[in-house]
Amino acid sequence: MLRSCKVPDRRCEMRLAGAGVGLLVVTSMLVAAKPVEAVDAVDAAPAAGYALSWADEFDGTAPDTAEWNFRTDLKGSQQLADNVKVGSGLMTIYLCPKNRAGENCQNTVASGNTYTGGGLISKRRLRYGYYETRAKMNVGSGWHSSFWAAQSGGASPQTEIDGFEVDSNLPAKIRHNVFAWGQGYTPTSNVYDLTFDTSAAFHTYGFEWLEDSVRFYVDGTLVEEGDVSAAYPADSYVHNYLNVWLTSIAYKPIENPVDESALPGKVQFDYFRYYQRDAYADNDTPGGSYTETGTGWGATGVRAFAGLTGRYSCDSGTAARWTIAPPATGTYDVYFYRAGGAGGQVDAPVTVWDGGTALIRSEVDLTQPSGWVLLGNHALTGGTSYIVRIDRDGAGCIRADSVKLVRSN
Image (cartoon, rainbow, N blue to C red; front, side):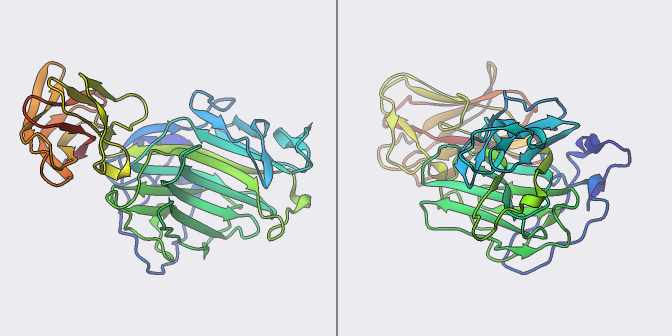
């Protein structure tokens, strides 16, 4: 069910962030997207259980450079910071003729006799959750607009998720992709028909990234097109932390020449929102949520969760700690990822701490096969930082990788 705001404030849906639309498994079935009326009033928030973790409503008078970098590469067009403006509750990317830039393309620039586009790239790197934006594409051919997530400057193997790709010569068509770069896997919706023109009005686009799947939504309706697959498990592919990109560039000019009569053009984004239901922390998490004490720590050769890196120590008195906060108050199953194998401590103590209070304590046999181990279940307070700690207090080595909080109610 789609939730609608009944007051003339685009952001009233923030009060409905926990309200749900049914989430289904993506298959290869061909199902056309459902038409949505009064799109500007539609709230396409994720299923119940998710909580808003980070958002930019673009309410200021300039891009928030504490949260975003500008896209400034040369690919088809020269991307420029000057082409990205924030005002009136929108982020606008101006699409300009050659050697022109800025709001309404009023400024002369040295762009190498190329068109100029632009976009924003989040400074935050995110992983599992529900990602959503509302956007309106440009009029006139020659531009490639996209809402996607990939690590800026990252190297393969890695993940890229394309929430939408729209080529402006085909404004009523769209594509969604998952790229397992360096891993030989690219599920895609292929280019398929929508029931609307993406340049005529704002529409909502989202994707849900889970530990085992990716699911795509248009105006709150699950997309079931082409070869997009629900199967994208962390035990088979690298799930790294991704930057969010909101961009528009001139691309493939031979196939899709720029309609210069439609310039200056613009692509607009109403907001970006990121929701979480569960929480993850590992030694690769950006932001320093993982720490080690003691000596002898090094990178383990055992495959870590999501194909990232794991750590180990065989020295006495060592410990590893993860700081993790649930996205909302509720009851959570607390899991520890066991990177198992020969030489591990058979009874390594793993404890969940709330300040100086031990909430859960369990012994994990690190000689057993790798996988998630349930430590216990506990009521936790949203936004509160908890510590999960593993100690080496016996024979063998401890391995430190990932922990997670899975919402159970």
